[in-house]
Image (tube, rainbow, N blue to C red):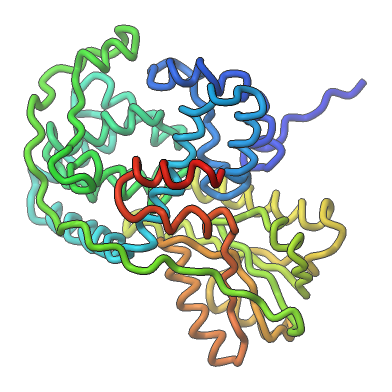
Amino acid sequence: MKAESTPPFASRAAGLARLAAFVPRAGEDYAHNRNLHRAGHPHVSRLAFYLRHRILSEQEVIAAARRTHGEAATSFVTEVLWRSYWKGWLEMRPQVWRETRAGVHAALSRLDRDRDLNRTYDAACTGKTGISGFDDWARDLVTTGYMHNHQRMCFASIWIFTLHLPWELGADFFMRHLLDGDPASNTLSWRWVAGLHTPGKAYLAKPEVITELSAGRHWPQGLASQAQAVTGPANPAPGPCPQGGAWDQSLPTALLLHEDDLTPDWLLQDGLRPLSTAFLVAPDDRSPRPVSDRIKTTLRQAVDDCARRLRSDLGGLHGPVEGAGAVDALVAWARQTAALQIVTPFAPVGPVASLIAALDLRLAAENIRLVRAMRPYDAALWPHATHGFFRFHQAVRGLV
C-alpha cells in the first residue's frame, strides 16, 4: 500500500492535522504546561500561523477543544480569544498602528546616527548579545520563523529593559521573521510588555523564571531588575468599530482573497458566486527592512494551497482562479472579469488593509465597487474590545 504523503506545512490539511494532534492536550495539560520552554514545544498548539491567515478559523479550533475537554479547555480558548481582542482593540484605534509604523522609521534613523545603538541592535537580531536564552530565541526565530509565546514576552522584555532598544524595532524584527506575524497581536503585545498598553504595568523578565521554565537550559545573567518607564502617546479613546459591507447579488462579482483570510467557504456558503478569484499578498509591506524569505515562500505555499482547494473542493463556485498580484495587476484583473463588484474578506488594520484601501480608490475610478465582507465572528467580538481584556472576555463568553 502506498504511504500517504505529508501535506505541505502551509496547507489547510496540515493545519487540520496539527489541530487533531494537539486537541488531546488542549485541556489541563495546556493550562498547566503552556509556558514551559521545551524542545519542540509539545504543550502548545503551534496553530498561530493557520489562525493568523485564517487557514483555520477560530470557531473550528475553539469548537474542537471544547468538544474534547469542555470547561477544561478554558485556558486554551482564552488564548485564542486574545487574537480577537487585539484585532478589535486596534480596529477602534488605528492611529496606534500608524504611530508604530512611524516609530519604526524614526528608530531606524536613530541607528544610522548612533553606532552603539546599532551594534546592540545587530547583536540582538543575530543572537550575539551573550544573554543566555535570548540569543537562542533570536537565532531560532530567524531560522524557523517561530518563537514560543512566553519566550516572546521574555525576549521583548530583555530587548526593551535590559538592552534599551526601541520597542518598535523589536516589533519590526518579529514582523520580519515570524511566520504568524500579525499586525495587531504583535504590535499590541510589544506595547503591553513595554507598559504602554496598560500604563504602569510593564512585563519584566526574571532570570529565575526563565531558568525554571527551561528546566535549567538557560541561565540569563545581568537582566534588568526594574522596568524603566517607556514613553509614548497615551492610548486613544476607542472610535467606532468598523462594519463589513454587503454585496449586491444582482451585480456581476469577482472575489479577491488576501493573506489575512485564505478560506472563503463562508462567503460561498452565503451565496457568493464570483466570476473569477484572485489573491493579494504583500509580505514586503510588513517592514521597511527585508522580510524573511521563509515568510514569502510559506505565503506562496498557502496561496497555492487555497487555489488548489478552490479548484478541486468547492465545485467550481469561484470562477477561474488567478494568481497573486499587486494593486496594478488587480485593477487589470478586475477589468478583464467584467465585474462591477469585487468582494473581499475584511482585512484588519495592517499592510493588507492599506493596500486594499488604495485598490478601492483605483477601482472606484473604474466604476467597480469594492465590498469588504466581515466574518460574523469578527463582527460579534470586535466591538467588545473597548477596554482591557478582562472586560472583553466577560462580554464575549456567551458568543463563542
